[in-house]
Length: 131
Image 1 (tube, one colour):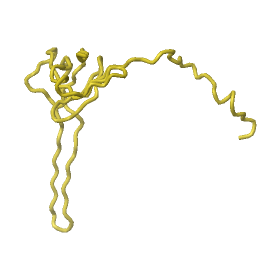
Image 2 (tube, one colour):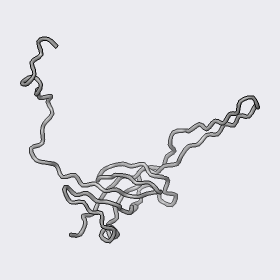
Image 3 (cartoon, helix red, strand yellow):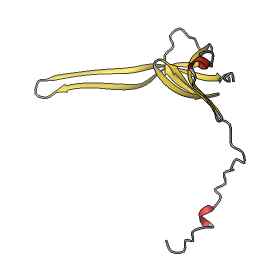
Image 4 (cartoon, helix red, strand yellow):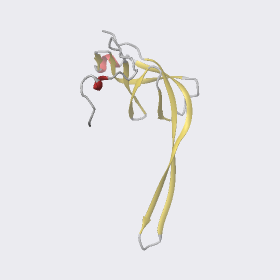
């Protein structure tokens, strides 16, 4: 590109602040409904429907991994005592999935729909691993 100088112009500030210190982000990998989710405090996550829970209830999720800054805890004996606390926010249905079956030249057509039921949970606490 004519008139474009590399170097000083390539490092223009875009208005975003650069953190002077590295942020410590605590997150966990939890299991719910046969799936694994990466969660942090304040996150709202969709999990398969929890039929016995009501909106506003608190649930505990089993933890598979906890990352606290540079410390990674994956020992099953330590994680057995760590349960992520979450609050039920909402029960709702997901998007509709259309299932169509068709066979050529036989007149065979079948149509089926499905809407998965979900529970939205908000993570309130991730306890620290005992060291």
